[in-house]
Image 1: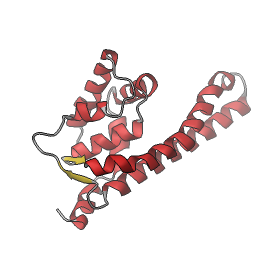
Image 2: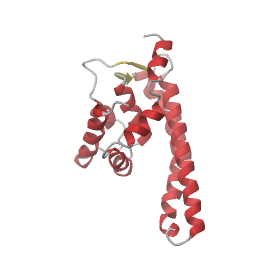
Image 3: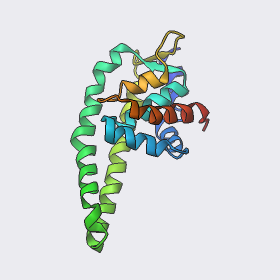
Image 4: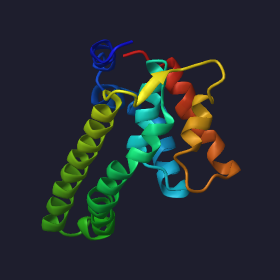
Amino acid sequence: MHSTQLCDVLRNPPLWDYALALYQRPGVADACLQLQDTAGADVCELLWRCWLDHHALVPTEQTYSTLDEIRAWQAEVTQPIRYLRRMLKPRARHAHDVATLRDHLKEAELLAERETLRQFQALSETLHAVRKRRADDASLTMQLTRCLTIHEPAQEAALATLTTQNTAHHP
C-alpha cells in the first residue's frame, strides 16, 4: 500500500471520529480512565492503537522512537490541565466561578487531547510508521499493554473491555 492509499484508508474514519465513537461504547470510558489512573496509560495512545487495529495496522518499530514528541505534549500540556481540573472538583461544588473555571479547563483538556489524536493520525500517515498486521503480531491486548507503566491483574478486565468493544465497534 503506498502512502496515498494509506492516508485514504486512515481517514475513513479519521482517528478523532473513531476515538469519540469508541469512547462512548459501554464500559470503554471507565476502562480507559482506570488504565490511565492505575496503570499510567495515555488514553489517546490506547484509542490510537485501537484505531490502527480497526484498520488491521500496527505501528512499526521505527514509530516507537518517534512517540516521544507526542508523549511530551501530553506530559507538558494535557496532564497539567487535567490535574488542575481534578484539583478544582471539590471547590467547584460550592463556588460558581470555580465551576466555570473548571468547565473551561475541561474544554482545554479536550482540545489538548484532540491535538494529541491529530498528532497520532499525522504520524500514522507518514511513510513507514505503520504496516499491515501479520498473523504473528501481538494481539491488541498485548499492544495496549505496551501503553501501561504498571501492569497488574487488576487491569485485565479494563483491557478486555477495550479490546472487546473495539472488535465490536464499526463506525
